[in-house]
Image (cartoon, rainbow, N blue to C red; front, side, top):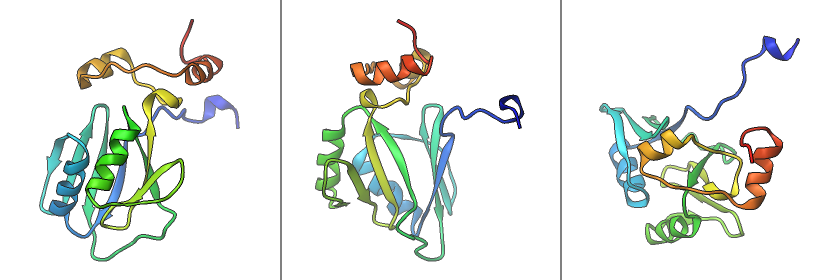
Length: 149
């Protein structure tokens, strides 16, 4: 199978999390981050993240298996850590910033300037962000042909 026979990964479109109470999930995540809703129903809410979203889906039980997680990209990981601690979230020890939300979902938080993930200037402007990259992240982006000098 050649590369032209396969789709190319572009980014994360959405992540769906099972929660036992959509309203409580929105309240929890609202304590951590400012966000808008793409849409909301009694059993689901869609948190808008520029060109991506997180779906909170009401489930009948706790489906956490300890391995499921998703990665959130933030502008400032230290600020996120403080917000998580203030919200009483279970934050795992160590250099990484992993936590469990009140519904058993594991989340990894990474800082935008330190990773390969990037957004176009147009998307960043629409989100009201002006973010840079560390020299290491820029080198990785250059190596992959994503940014030019």
